[in-house]
Length: 553
Image (cartoon, rainbow, N blue to C red; front, side, top):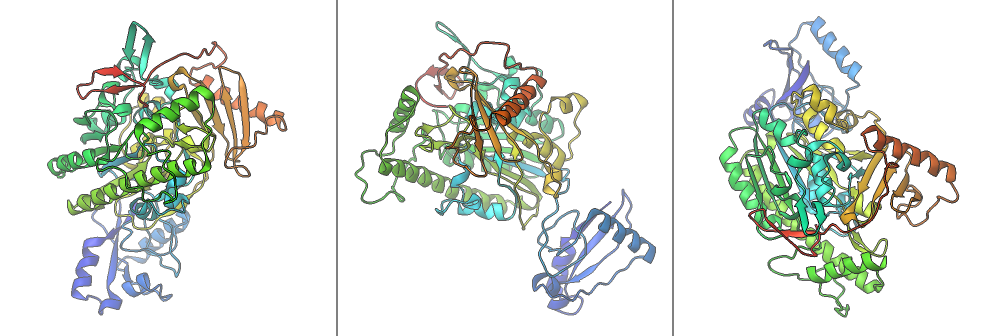
């Protein structure tokens, strides 16, 4: 049983002035039960909706007994507050008050689904999540109409392991896409491929395709190259020739594909490396946020960025001047703003195709990136928040009002959330595969606090695991050194003050929970010696072959 706003009737009555002129225009809600055609109508004056008039006029064409049942159901569900015709919420009630109400999340069977990944976008650089520099106006506008998760964490701090978790619903340790080479012992080299490493796993694209969705992925190549197995389940999967492609290449191809499939339900994965250190805008940088007095020791090139990353890995830290740090953060923000401009154009054309009202949007990032928060550049090599704290915005079809959710959640929750929202039938074997949980209860106000886990085996340079508790404590365990760091994120969000020595019992408890979680998925962290080594990153050619280079991701 649910309540659905009759948008077509509302728009017609608005045009004709039905029910007594503009102030009396009625939004009409239908009560639906099973396949019955029975309905009841509640007419809500537009004046009450849009001016927050405290007087409510209702005209109900329904037997009194049915109305009482409906009212009891609303009260049992805790539904109250304003209902806006612009909200188009499929479980809204017809109760109107003088204060706005948070949107209600409901299943959206048969709607389209778009997953957007702004690669390497640190949460702290998004306006909707607190950035003081206005570089994400289009993302922020989407966030205002979405369920916004302010404490979303990626399962890993770089692309290959992190993104694959969206599509498999398991931890990197399980899908085994932890580095770009499954084997690297020259002359023996073998690229990692999900279809060989974990052939038993069913992907999100697999499931949606089996349920009648057209599936298309349009990406910037590199860490989400189809050769890794990302193309599994996709009808079309584009990865740009070269290495780190941007939205300027993936968006036009995505829009062309959408024109072909717009009359059927579809799943679109849209990705770009625009904010990444190895991406350079085709038109060059304009240094819009750089201090005019900066002496230009650096120019912001991918080559400089790569060199600084490797220096940080070799030495453990960089010795950059504060103006240099601010320069690199300014370059990062310029890239983000350029990507945001591209995204605004995509949303405009998407809407002109008439697809917005029937599409579920999820916007996120695979990981963040570091710009000297811990005296290094890039990502993958730590699990500090600048590398794993990511944006996550979920916008339902027709949703125009937002809701902020502050509980900690994991990127591993995305796949079960999508399947739940789209009401996709999932076999028992797939349910047993999924390690996350649907965010639908959290979106409707339930407290679903639980520990959040992350990991990285970046290039076999390091092996780290972390746990973040609902209370804001974070433990990072480095396996090759058997060392640990403990931070109180509430008091020390920058993770600058290690409390392992002062809180050893808490560190012991969190370490036990961390190790137990990985043991529960078949990975005993105490069963082996974690020896560091070398697993290079590389450039992918458009045909899927590779050549080894020092390039990141």
